[in-house]
Length: 323
Image (cartoon, rainbow, N blue to C red; front, top):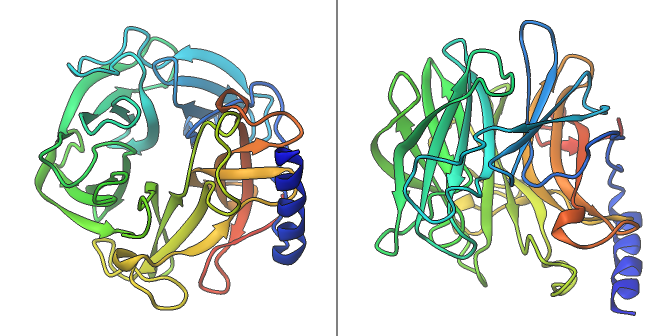
């Protein structure tokens, strides 16, 4: 009865908000925290996700069919922390003519965390070199958690956005190789309300603005502990003309003071979308991709599906559209 009640509530919200449904997916469509990149040489799509030492798959399009290739680092990470064989939240980028996948080593609810990096020239199975920690690590003495990496390159310099809970989202500059951090990290998003569940950032530039997408709310274990309506995962955004800070939402509220405009939330049979990224697709243009629960399938973490939608920035703010 509880799940039926939530399904009705979500359906009513969908009518009010008018969110587009996720684009189609075939093949291997179960993911968590996906990251998508397209190989330059032949246009093949690769999708990386949490679990199984970063599970990854390939396809000829965003819609699939997706074919599982295996694990990014089948032996785990060289980072000496608990969780180094259960890697999280990959971020795939093409930097210095190589393919980079940043990843997090941690355990659920822990602040003993670190961000690592693997690289490949081709993205083929067993072609990855693990570089271990990039020098971003956290413990109980830190005001951040070193998980959920995302890198944006501006004027040939990489900047790492990372973090979850505690002080929420931070940024730090990377050295020219983008394999090590340099300098001191600084806060770019914080919400002090409740458990201040702000995580999974992804920065994307369109025109004069840098858009800071992030996930907010309860992410997981919906089958055993369903959160109150509206407190489940959703995707928010703030923007700034500087990639290093001063992000505000559509109402002008600072992203370091709880600001954040909702881009996508539960609607219809789509529940708890998050773990997002943005991808420039040759067919659709900018695409928002994410994981979500299809309430017709199930609420368990193992049921999370790969979702995607084209997004338009014509209004100055990202609006989800139908594929």
